Length: 192
Image (cartoon, rainbow, N blue to C red; front, side):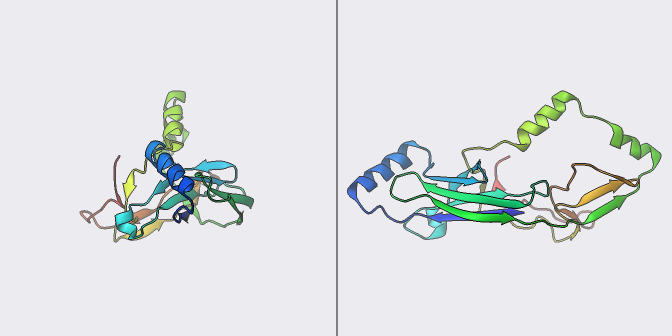
């Protein structure tokens, strides 16, 4: 589940505001908007003005929530860092959600794969990529479904393997089922 936050910034009202905005956007690599959700900084990216057809900047931040996030109150804080606007604080609530559960039964040979442990080195590499945030937006345009196939596994789904609950696991994507040779496309233009 992801919440998209859009911030539209009007024109500065004073000559000093124009100078501050110009300096900040020229030298600060588009860090004009700061978004914070529940005490955690969230990157925001300027949208391409030729695509928004606006003469003022619009920024977008994508705030992910997961089944591992505990329900409760959070604060969404948005700041425009040129000094011309007051910070905006919006109370939000993450509600308790019920996700589907999948029961998977594996034969002895495949069940052994469940007992394999990643090495500490592999685990550290995976964690580093999972929490990587870049100052640059690596995609362009809206996201679309990569397949016309049927969704076979939903986001957030929990699993039991051979009757045993997979602790701290939730499915982090969508799985699609389609015929062999069916086209698969990228959900957005971007860089990997």
